[in-house]
Amino acid sequence: MKIGIIGTGYVGLPTGVGLAELGNEVVCIDRDEEKIAALQSGKLTLFEDGLEELFKKNVAEGHLRFTRSMREGVEGADLVMIAVGTPPHPVTKEADMKYIHAAAAELAPCLSGYTVIATKSTVPVGTGDDIEGLIRKTNPQADFDVVSLPEFLREGFAIHDFFHPDRIVVGANTEKAADVLKALYRPFEGKTQMLFVKRRSSETIKYASNAFLAIKIHYINEMADFCEKAGADVYEVAKGMGLDSRIGPRFLNPGPGYGGSCFPKDTNAMAYMGRQNGVNLSLIQAAIDGNDARKHAMADRIWEAVGDNAGAKIAVLGLAFKDGTDDCRESPAMQIVENLLLKQAKIMAYDPKAMDNARKILGDKIAYARDEYEAANGADVLVVLTEWSDFKHLDLAKLKGLMNTPKIVDLRNMLCPEEVKEQGFEYSRIGKKF
Image 1 (cartoon, rainbow, N blue to C red):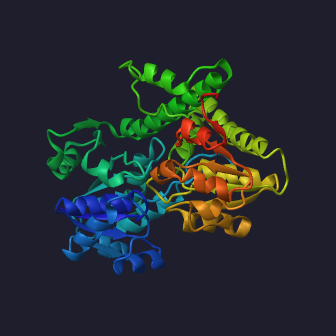
Image 2: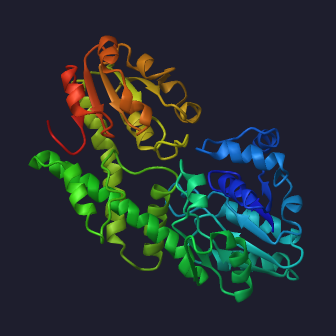
Image 3: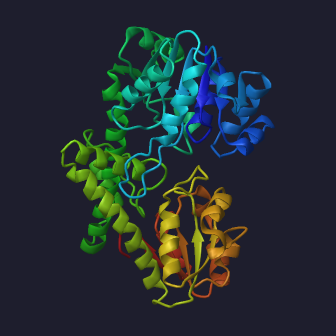
């Protein structure tokens, strides 16, 4: 199958590589000249575990190409996927559709033969109708269908999730379009559940799923706060909850709050759509408000550890919003760092993968270390903000020798409390008092 993918970000690029690995002819399209030049020269523009090997393999075999030309990418394609960004509006927080509309308008005159256009981006309910109307207005002769094809790839695990999906959801209003997607996903027959629904239902499924998971994360964070006050252990509580098959164990890990490119954006967009439709989505709004407040509360917890001391040096481990990715968008770590900077803290940070992206956001507001130990040198407190596995195995004796005062605030509960206490550290973690 010939496939064009518009957008080479955290959705478009892993999807393109995965589809090429399945034997399709894939052309990825992006307006960014620098990004396309890098990809054409064999250089990845983002980090995803397992992506590089498959990327190089399929480029070498000719299954995967990159271009800035919309016509080159979509002309003669059986399927075109739109995987561009839908960033939140700065005021209303609704999904900004300008990149979706621009992509649809640009591809419309390039269509030749029957083409299925799949919206891979997370878009408001009714977007498929808008794309269909825009294309028909621009190119009345075009033979096409628009489907919703929500992505469920976790950043950091996108390649694994592509080949081992929990489910594949297709929102198609015609059997002809559904048949094209059935052919595309034939390699997954018998391996996962495929759900075919109406287009508007599919558009809602992605938002409803992410909003539910965000609520679950916020809930366990509230329980962690309760456990600290009441003398319970949040991990024992979470394990007991997770054994209930109606609840399940996933997304019950306490931390500094949810972040990334999906949950904050999608919960805000869902809340906006609720208001637009006259529906009070109170649980979603409570999770949004509580998650925002949590970043401030976590910054306050760190600040208390240094005694409200302006100019205190804080060593920060982790800047990405989670492990396995270099993405710093809406990262709790970054937001906590911003809060600490307002308190006049001096910050030296280290992240195994996200230093370049963090530097683009924070510039010279903080210092950047080569490793965990350079970050800790002379620090008044060390803070763990991202759950990289490297941080589980810190040389605690070495850290203590480097730090100004032996204090650790572990907002990801990465370290062994007994070992930390044995080394003489003052230790604070989430969901349990010591």
